Length: 209
Image (cartoon, rainbow, N blue to C red; front, side, top):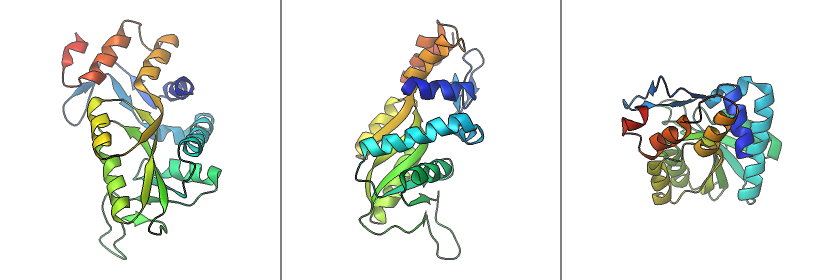
């Protein structure tokens, strides 16, 4: 399934590998990969595969789940579709509380003690997902874990999730993606190890040379 999902993401260009002309992140780090899982929503065939995979992963890894919560904004639609497949309630967590009305940060009716799974589109350093988990915990939720579509598998992200005692299960990852990218001819075979070198140490630009 990891390679199937990776193939779908590559085919619809939700994930683009461009090692010869690296992308520049907001932090200034040069990256051979760019991920925009929002594009899944406008690709019906890939969307069907991905959303069913999210539902299946939630059902397998977190059988006691009572509610799905999407991260704002990228995880909201995925949480809604997967919740519909599973017949579960869903909601989402804003980046910050509203400054009007009821000043909600968490949208959707969630009682204290509710067993929640967070739906996230991408795990890189893990910061945004952990913020969502902490907001839910503060509101009284029992957060079982995260199901995400894709993860780079960066050490910083893995360490932060472990420190926050958050379990993440991703549908696919960078290791599977580069294998499929070579098989499908998206990148030359010699780029595979260089891209993984970037993942293991993003601040070291020696992979470019």
